Image (tube, rainbow, N blue to C red; front, side):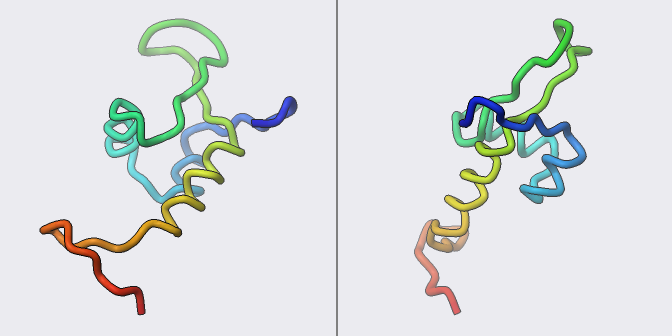
Length: 78
């Protein structure tokens, strides 16, 4: 994260990562996705976003990860 990191709201987060909101929440809870940042407010109606640099790191790490099938066996990338 940089000192002047851009905060990204939900529509752009989905565009950058290609991950649905429900999968995003699931990955956040398991610690496998960048944590959201509260911009304003509290509770379920709080205004939140994600740090752009952390989303970019997440996407880059997914590109480096091996492909696996439903049984967890690695599949060679073509």
